[in-house]
Image (cartoon, rainbow, N blue to C red; front, side, top):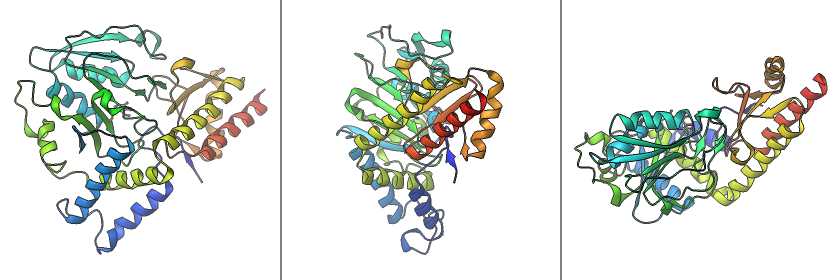
Length: 355
Ligand SMILES: Cc1ncc(COP(=O)(O)O)c(C=O)c1O
């Protein structure tokens, strides 16, 4: 048995893997594989409608917001957001909390004027800047909710007079959010939702079509809203498996239940990092992520040895991102407390051996 702490693509619920594998051979008793059915078939239409309804229900998405499944990953959204929301001659505000924010900023700068309101680059992004002002004439304010690489997360939605846009790729569906606070939310599905391929976008309809820019249809949210995410062939399998994960989440009791589990998992692991004399966390305590726990060994020479022990215990995907080093335990929705306890046991065993 392996416990997969990979940052994404990553662990999904075992039941979802099981059901998806059956659908690869025979989807819903159609005698066809989910991989070969038409995206225009009534069977797939039922899948995409259910996926959308489950997102609406689990996140209490209000009327006036469209839910889309697009392609190109969160990275395509780095460009689509300014193309669709930043008027010609306008200005957009961004908070720089890591590599993904920086990439979003870089892309937006190709399209219009960008104000970076604050950055934590000075401390290798180990904290979230708190003291900044969003210009009131900005078309929108963009921030990354969870910094997958650095292990920091923004729990309190920033206050802003302008529409908020958030990259929630690595913490979507891990805790409740108030969708009405946002103009647009996007997330690559490959963490808490499904296999890589689809990107979830939740957008407030009234913000669209106001830039004065003519866009290629494929990059225009309005084409996808009008076609209900079937403007072109969508990533059928990714959307199907996302729908199964959404069903799993609903059957578990929804976002409130998963949030409590995520709190317990994160606390268990951070408590051990604090207690264990051989390890230390890299993110400042008040901004620590519940999804990606980043930590290092006090003694650099212990790093490879701990990874080896972890591997022997079936704990995989723990190597930290090269820009932080050490370890990163991604403890997304589907990673059970059993997995976290197995990691804590390995850390305690390692301390015993190396004291
Ligand atoms: C917060 C965040 N934003 C954006 C991305 C890029 O996503 P994609 O690979 O889907 O373009 C990632 C990938 O890990 C991420 O964690």
